[in-house]
Length: 253
Image (cartoon, rainbow, N blue to C red; front, top):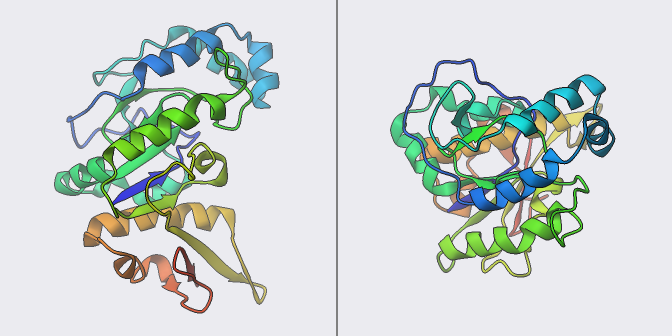
């Protein structure tokens, strides 16, 4: 099984690490190409490009100047699974996982990234802000999608076995960096909906957290098949067979 997930803007470099094992990202040379373009952007350019405040632009300009692409754990670099700290990762709660489960995710989980392309859970990363949908030209590519699409799908296809389950738990923005026509297996997409005022809706905060919980469920239960995924019941969710299709799995509560 392979699972793709979005990254997070919120980062944690403070919490004590429960595990020292770490690996090196596979696309460091490509990340350095993007870094070269980022370093040429002024704080004002970054503010406009990313639609962020001047304070955030100043912070990320400094990060872009300082980034060394460290491959060892330090005060400013640590494993992706412990660094990323948004709603998805609160749902996943990697800090409470056993080493055995984390090593299992190292094999199955792939985090899509505007800067690093793909991060495995134990890949060392530094602080950055670069969403996949940002129109940053890189070389002859007009944006990050053009730059990453052929690289990401080639990397995924290289490790995907025939008929291996491929689970999309990423946002539309990040999953759009995968050329699904070139992907050699079908995509299974879980979705999480809540009843609100009598209507069934995707509530962003809950849906993000549920994506992380689904990753945790897969790790906790050693889920191997679509039927295994249908047993997901964390936080009150349940599989809805009437709303689901063979590839779109709808969970409601």
